[in-house]
Image 1: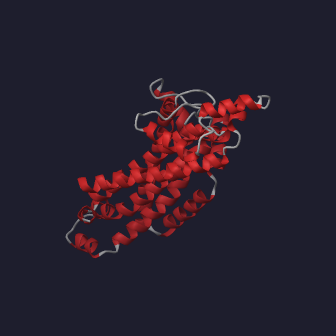
Image 2: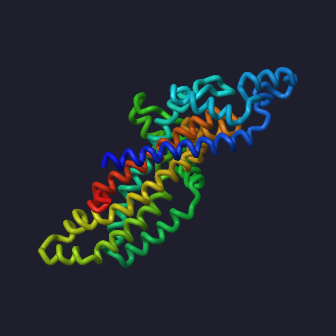
Image 3: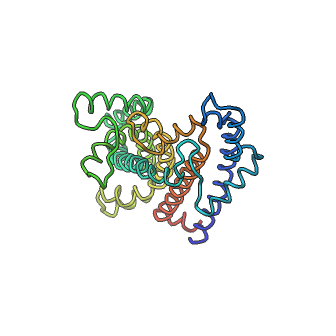
Length: 313
C-alpha cells in the first residue's frame, strides 16, 4: 500500500509540473501588454519598459518559468502584480471558502444519491421512473440558472438565506450555514443527477449476482443484503463517479461564487485571469491541481478499503 501511495504521489508531482508549464505558456501568450495594464494607458514607454524589467517580463519565457519553479520550493509563489499581496496568502484566505462549499456539495450529493439510487433500484416502477425524470432535469438545467432561481425564491422573496456574501464558520455557525446553503444546493443538484444514476445502475447490477441469491437463501433480510453487501460491491464505481463530480464541482464553484458574491478561489480565478495576473493564476493552478490529486488518492484508498481485489492489484 505504501508503494502504491508513493507511486501515486510521484505521478501527481509529474502531473503538476506538466500542468504548470502548459498554464504558464498559455498565460504568457495571452497576457498582452501587462505592464501598461498595470500602469495605465497614460504611462510612458520608458515607464512601461522599466515595469516590464521589474516584473521580469523582458526575460525569455523559460527563464521566467524556471525562476517561478525554483521559488516554489521555498514556499514563495510571488506577489500579485496588481495588489501586491502575497499569492500564498491570497490563495490560503480563499481556499477554505471554496472547499467548504465544494465538500458540502459533495457530501450532500453522496448522501442523497445513495438513498435515492438504492430506493429506485429496489422499488422500480413509478419510483424508478420518477427518479430517472428528475435526474434528467437536474442534469439538463445549467448551474448558474439554478443559482439565480435559488437566490430569487429563497433569499429575496422568502428571506430564509443570505443572497450574497460569506460568513466564516469561526465567526458564526448559523451565519455560515445561511451563507453556504444555497451555493451548496446550486452546486449539488447536477452532481446528484449523475451520481444517482451510477448508484442505481451499480446496485441493480450487484443485486443480480449469485452471491446475493446465496445470502438471501441463508435467511438474511433484504435490508441487510443491500446495505451490508450490495452497497459495498456497488460503491467502487459510484466513488469513481463522485471523484469526477468533485472535480466538476470545483469548476462549477467559479460560476456559483460569482452569482453569490462569495470570496473564494473561483471568484479570485475570474478576477486574476481577467487582469492577466500571472502569479495569482499560477498559484491557483497549483492549488487546484494539488486538491484534485489528493481527492483522487483518497478515492483510490477508499476503493481499496471496499474491494480487496483493488488492494491486491
